[in-house]
Amino acid sequence: MKTRIFVTLKNGVLDPQGKAIHHALHALGFAGVNDVRAGKLIELDLADGTSREEIEAMCNRLLANTVIENFRIEDM
Amino acid sequence: MKTRIFVTLKNGVLDPQGKAIHHALHALGFAGVNDVRAGKLIELDLADGTSREEIEAMCNRLLANTVIENFRIEDM
Image (tube, rainbow over all chains, first blue to last red; front, top):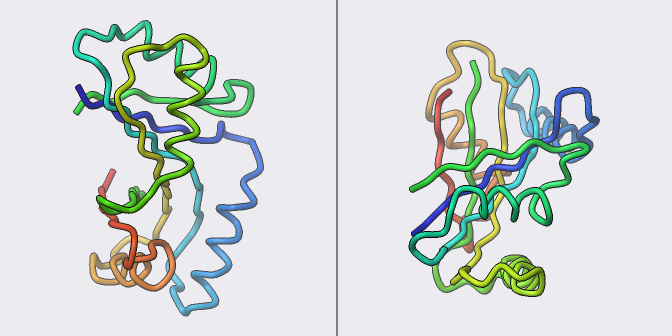
């Protein structure tokens, strides 16, 4: 059972990695970029029957820092 | 116009970050995890009318290292 976790910074949290990518895209001549936000993608291969609650516990305890990050769980 | 880029390591490329997450999940008592792969998620806010070709050029030139990484473009 494969699951994807998307971890993104909450709105209002500064994103220096995204800013650096934004600047680099401009420097390469890509003009039409208004904003860039960088996040993480974690692909989990889980034992069948792993509950949604358990996946959320993994996110809350390890995969995301819920003070500054949101996470979204997507089954594949 | 918002677009998401998913950057993942190609199959066969070692993923120490994923391995570290896997070990940490085990140490926290989450037993049913078979494998973990870590990737990147880049959210772009682009000017309307930016072509698919231009987005692919951004990925090939900056966002992904196509020797070891795949990328996938998803419009939102």
